[in-house]
Amino acid sequence: MNGQQRSEQNLATFLSWVASKTDPDFREMVMRGQLSRQEIARECGFAKSVLLQNPRVKDALRLLEEQLRSRKLLPPLVESSLTNTPEPATPNPRAAADKARLKRLEAENASLRAELTLVRGDLERFRLIDEVLCSTGRLPR
Image (cartoon, rainbow, N blue to C red; front, side, top):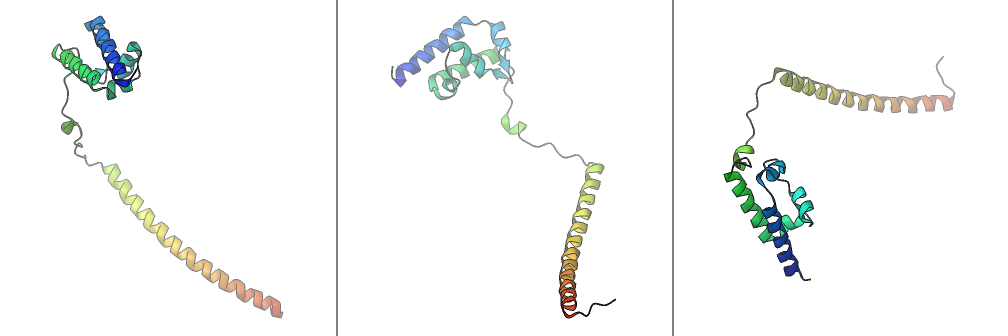
Protein backbone atom coordinates (compact mmCIF):
# COMPACT_ATOMS: atom_id res chain seq x y z
CA MET A 1 0.00 0.00 0.00
CA ASN A 2 1.52 3.33 -1.02
CA GLY A 3 1.34 6.60 0.90
CA GLN A 4 -1.61 8.01 -1.02
CA GLN A 5 -3.67 4.87 -0.44
CA ARG A 6 -2.75 4.94 3.25
CA SER A 7 -3.82 8.59 3.36
CA GLU A 8 -7.20 7.75 1.80
CA GLN A 9 -7.67 4.86 4.22
CA ASN A 10 -6.86 7.08 7.22
CA LEU A 11 -9.33 9.71 5.99
CA ALA A 12 -12.06 7.07 5.55
CA THR A 13 -11.32 5.70 9.02
CA PHE A 14 -11.52 9.19 10.52
CA LEU A 15 -14.78 10.06 8.75
CA SER A 16 -16.41 6.79 9.85
CA TRP A 17 -15.21 7.44 13.41
CA VAL A 18 -16.77 10.94 13.30
CA ALA A 19 -20.07 9.47 12.05
CA SER A 20 -20.12 6.95 14.92
CA LYS A 21 -19.79 9.60 17.66
CA THR A 22 -22.55 11.51 19.39
CA ASP A 23 -22.46 14.93 21.04
CA PRO A 24 -21.94 13.48 24.56
CA ASP A 25 -19.04 11.40 23.19
CA PHE A 26 -17.39 14.52 21.79
CA ARG A 27 -18.04 16.42 25.03
CA GLU A 28 -16.05 13.76 26.96
CA MET A 29 -13.08 14.15 24.62
CA VAL A 30 -12.59 17.90 25.11
CA MET A 31 -9.17 18.80 26.44
CA ARG A 32 -7.85 22.38 26.61
CA GLY A 33 -10.54 23.72 24.32
CA GLN A 34 -10.17 21.13 21.57
CA LEU A 35 -10.70 17.44 20.97
CA SER A 36 -7.99 15.21 22.39
CA ARG A 37 -5.72 14.27 19.48
CA GLN A 38 -4.28 11.34 21.39
CA GLU A 39 -7.69 9.84 22.09
CA ILE A 40 -8.84 10.32 18.48
CA ALA A 41 -5.72 8.59 17.17
CA ARG A 42 -6.13 5.72 19.64
CA GLU A 43 -9.79 5.17 18.74
CA CYS A 44 -9.12 5.42 14.98
CA GLY A 45 -6.15 3.06 15.22
CA PHE A 46 -3.52 5.29 13.64
CA ALA A 47 -0.63 7.43 14.86
CA LYS A 48 -1.24 10.91 16.24
CA SER A 49 1.01 12.27 13.49
CA VAL A 50 -1.73 11.42 10.95
CA LEU A 51 -3.86 14.17 12.50
CA LEU A 52 -1.03 16.67 12.13
CA GLN A 53 0.55 15.64 8.81
CA ASN A 54 -2.25 14.31 6.60
CA PRO A 55 -3.76 17.50 5.13
CA ARG A 56 -7.18 15.99 4.39
CA VAL A 57 -7.56 14.49 7.87
CA LYS A 58 -6.25 17.72 9.39
CA ASP A 59 -8.86 19.77 7.47
CA ALA A 60 -11.63 17.31 8.37
CA LEU A 61 -10.69 17.58 12.06
CA ARG A 62 -10.61 21.40 11.86
CA LEU A 63 -14.06 21.38 10.22
CA LEU A 64 -15.38 19.00 12.88
CA GLU A 65 -14.12 21.28 15.66
CA GLU A 66 -15.68 24.33 13.98
CA GLN A 67 -19.01 22.49 13.82
CA LEU A 68 -18.72 21.48 17.46
CA ARG A 69 -17.96 25.12 18.38
CA SER A 70 -21.05 26.29 16.49
CA ARG A 71 -23.10 23.73 18.45
CA LYS A 72 -21.49 24.99 21.71
CA LEU A 73 -19.82 21.63 22.44
CA LEU A 74 -16.37 23.23 22.31
CA PRO A 75 -15.44 26.61 23.79
CA PRO A 76 -14.88 29.44 21.29
CA LEU A 77 -11.36 30.13 20.08
CA VAL A 78 -9.47 32.89 21.86
CA GLU A 79 -7.30 35.31 19.91
CA SER A 80 -3.69 34.20 20.37
CA SER A 81 -2.40 37.79 20.28
CA LEU A 82 -4.50 38.61 23.34
CA THR A 83 -3.30 35.60 25.32
CA ASN A 84 0.38 36.30 24.64
CA THR A 85 0.38 39.84 25.99
CA PRO A 86 1.99 39.93 29.41
CA GLU A 87 -0.03 41.30 32.27
CA PRO A 88 1.25 44.57 33.72
CA ALA A 89 3.50 43.92 36.65
CA THR A 90 2.14 45.01 39.97
CA PRO A 91 4.68 46.66 42.23
CA ASN A 92 5.65 44.26 44.97
CA PRO A 93 7.50 45.87 47.90
CA ARG A 94 9.07 42.58 48.95
CA ALA A 95 10.41 41.95 45.44
CA ALA A 96 11.94 45.43 45.38
CA ALA A 97 13.54 44.86 48.79
CA ASP A 98 14.88 41.48 47.66
CA LYS A 99 16.32 43.04 44.52
CA ALA A 100 18.06 45.76 46.52
CA ARG A 101 19.41 43.21 49.00
CA LEU A 102 20.70 41.03 46.17
CA LYS A 103 22.49 43.98 44.58
CA ARG A 104 24.09 44.93 47.91
CA LEU A 105 25.23 41.34 48.54
CA GLU A 106 26.69 41.02 45.05
CA ALA A 107 28.69 44.23 45.54
CA GLU A 108 29.93 43.02 48.95
CA ASN A 109 30.86 39.66 47.45
CA ALA A 110 32.87 41.34 44.67
CA SER A 111 34.77 43.54 47.16
CA LEU A 112 35.54 40.53 49.38
CA ARG A 113 36.85 38.58 46.40
CA ALA A 114 39.18 41.47 45.50
CA GLU A 115 40.41 41.71 49.09
CA LEU A 116 40.99 37.94 49.19
CA THR A 117 43.14 38.14 46.06
CA LEU A 118 45.30 40.84 47.68
CA VAL A 119 45.64 38.88 50.93
CA ARG A 120 46.65 35.71 49.06
CA GLY A 121 49.36 37.71 47.25
CA ASP A 122 50.69 39.01 50.60
CA LEU A 123 50.61 35.49 52.06
CA GLU A 124 52.67 34.15 49.17
CA ARG A 125 55.21 36.95 49.62
CA PHE A 126 55.53 36.29 53.38
CA ARG A 127 55.80 32.57 52.74
CA LEU A 128 58.84 33.23 50.50
CA ILE A 129 60.42 35.49 53.16
CA ASP A 130 59.87 32.80 55.82
CA GLU A 131 61.44 30.18 53.57
CA VAL A 132 64.54 32.31 53.00
CA LEU A 133 64.91 33.04 56.73
CA CYS A 134 64.57 29.34 57.59
CA SER A 135 67.19 28.30 55.04
CA THR A 136 69.72 30.89 56.30
CA GLY A 137 69.07 30.13 59.96
CA ARG A 138 67.90 33.59 60.90
CA LEU A 139 64.48 32.79 62.34
CA PRO A 140 63.26 35.39 64.81
CA ARG A 141 62.44 34.10 68.30
